[in-house]
Image 1 (tube, each protein chain N blue to C red):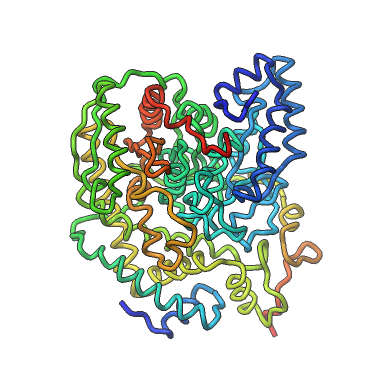
Image 2: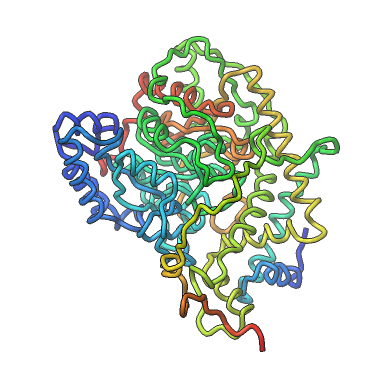
Length: 96
Length: 486
């Protein structure tokens, strides 16, 4: 399956990735070959098969009581932030 | 005394018998890490001062008769496990300044059992790779031949154990990332059942496949570590609430009557002839020990690599959406607006293979393609799991090669992603079905280690470790060390 350059640009946009022109060409080629490769899945007859929801049979999503268990870690968490002020994460202006 | 040549089990006895102190032990391994870092590049961060301080405390505990089962023993953590107050990079430029505010459950459990963290090991970026060449911090080299790859993604952990820079290291396995490097470096690696070891604080790649485990010199050492790192964790919603058996206590159970299934699909044309000989010789050892061999077929297994390269990238594209340049991680300079901030931070912060997988995943989950790719792959995954289930109604464990070939040269497979992906052709099935699996050394092919893979039903880690340990009592492949590291 050959993906077009426009398709690669659209995927990169959806994935929020800025790519250099040289990267676009590389991914156009390699993603096309990856989708040829995964196309082999069509060989399997899955008409009566339910998709796997969990690797362990019979496991369901565990729930916990809806109570506060965490304490405030904002200060320590924000030490990893690129830009903060007054306890807030700073980003470029969003609303004009 | 060459303490680096001793197993964890022997070191534990030596510490308690006061043959050496934890400080001496830890300093010895740290010196080896420093000495071989320029050649192997196995570590991202070396924790000399904190490790020596912890060793002093361990010596005080040992003197007072206190401490846990691993008190004073050194370990290395793959740089994907969050470690409080320590750089945790996941092998990526995206996280090259990230100091984790908390410990992963695995790190906390091993710490409370008394283990001392020497270093954080190098790895493929975000665990995406089979050769350790995608790391932002450069490739790790194979101790058996430094022109060759150590395998990946836990290449730093495997190389470090093979070169005896540490007696054991944590690792993770999403498609073979514990077993494949363990095989290529000639060490013992265990990927437990999905849900056996907590994923809390493991930086996520593909959440339905990721599982933490251990790489060590022997199966007995792996059992010692796995017993401490396993168990229920309320912080991981897929952690299984089941008691952890004593993996050490069951190591010596006799293997007479063990029914071993030989995976027909693993002995295919892709398997190197010398590797196949070593595997057949190992199987003959099991026969001598009273096990019986029978061929079994898993007809859907050849579809495991294509199924994986839909499911894993899909989950990766979702998990890695959190790296947005806002709360942590790399941020691009002088963003024009919020979209530019996201796109350039991610474009600059992620390496080529990670971007390839994010884009593959984004595409298979995008409108109009979900049914054709993701849903189809999850159905094929169900077929593969059913194949394994059928096999385990006939046999106790499955055995075969871990990898098609021994270690390959650095740079040999980087140009074509599919060639690289096919390295994991024998390991991915266990991840798709959530099964425990391990790799143990079983000989050499042209001077390079060959790994025997053992796969079992869910929660059969004890049986796998038992089968591996009894083999290691009969053979000495696991004691072989590359000459320059002996």
